[in-house]
Image 1 (cartoon, rainbow, N blue to C red):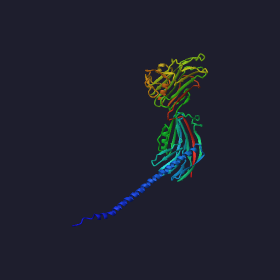
Image 2: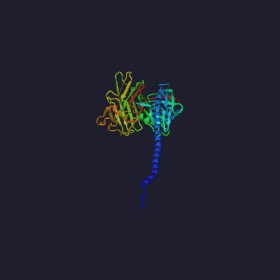
Image 3: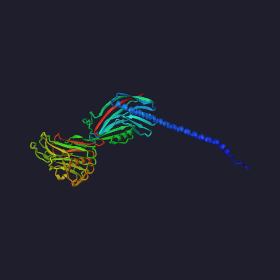
Image 4: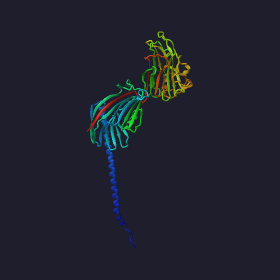
Length: 496
C-alpha cells in the first residue's frame, strides 16, 4: 500500500517562493514609498519656499510703496534664503489712460491718450510658481496659469473718485537663491491728471476736474492680466473687459456729464450721463436775463432745449413769453410764461407733456425785474412748490413747434408712473388728479433717459444776455468718474 504524499515536504518546498514574494512586495512598497513620499516632500518644500517668497514679496510691496509715494528716499529689503530666481524687468507690462469721446464728437480725434508707459516688475520664479510685484501690487501665478491677487495695487475707486498713483519699476538685475535688494526713488507724484499745464487736442481745454464728457478707460497689458481683471471687477462698478490674447484688460468709467452751471444760449449743449437710477436729479434751474441793452424785455421770447438718447427717448424743455411791449419795472409789472416739459419713449410716436400755461396765476415762472432793473425769468424744473399740469401742449396754442415734432395723435390720454420706487403707481393722470409739483414728473422722465445730449434752440429773437445760465446737479451711479487723480511714480530696484 502506497503512502500518502507528505504535506510537510510540500510546505518545506514552497517556503523559499513565499519568502521571495514577501520580499518582493516589501521592496516594491519601500520603493513606492520612497518615490511618492519623496515627491510629496518635494511638493511640501516647494509650497514652503513659495509661501516664504510670498511673504517676502508682500513686505517688499510695503517698502516699495514708502519709496514710490514719497515717505522714504530708499529702502533695503531682504527676500530670504529661498532657492529660485529673482529678477527685475523694467519693460514688463504697460499702462494706458485714455479719455474717449472727450469732446462729445465722433471725429477722429475724439480719443485722447493721456498717459502711456511701461509698468515694469520684480519677479520671483521657482518651479511652476511665479510671484511678481507690478503696479504697486503683488500677483501670483501657479501651474494653472491664471494670476491671482496677493496684495492690491495702488488703484482706488470710491464715490466717483479714481485715485491712481501709477508705480513703475526700473532696473535689470537678476539673482538666484538668497537675495536682497535696494529700492530707490526716481520720481514721485509727477502729475498726470488733473494737470493745469496740459490741454486736450483742441489746445484750450485743460486736463482738469471735474471730468466731463465721454468715458475714462484704464488699460493694463500684463502677464498677470487675469489678476488685474479680477481686481477691477471687485473694486469698480465700471465696464471691465475680458483679457485678450495680448494680455490686455480695460476698466471703463463713464464721466458724469455736465454738473453745475451750463450755458443756455443758442446752440449750446447740456450733457447728462451716468445718472443714478431712480429720481436722482437734485437740481435743474434755468435763469434768463435780458441784459442786451436793446430794451427787448423778452418780447417774442421763445426758447427750448431738446435731446434724444440712443433708445429713442426724447426730452424737451420749452419756454415762451406771453407778455408784450416793455416791462414796467417801476410799477412792479410781471409777465406770465408758458413752460412745457415734453417726454416720449419712442421718438414721438406717443408722448407726455406737462405744462405751466399762461393762466398759471401762482407767481411762479414769471418774468419780473431784478435788482438791476433787467427783466429776468427763473424756471425751476425741480421745484416742489410750482405745479405742472398734465395736458396736451397742442391745446395751448403756443407760438412755435417743439423741436421734438411728435406725432399729431401721439398724446397719451392717461399716464401713471410705476418704474421707480419714488413713483406713486396708484395715481393716474389726469383721471385721479391732473397736477403735480414740477419735481416729480421732471425727475421721473430724466430717470427714464440714458446718456442724453441736449441742445439749446432759441426759436425766436430772445435777446437773452450772457448772464443767463442753467444749473444742474444729479447723483452719479457706480460706473461714474467725476474726479480723477493720477500721478507717475517710479522706483529703481537693484538686486544683490
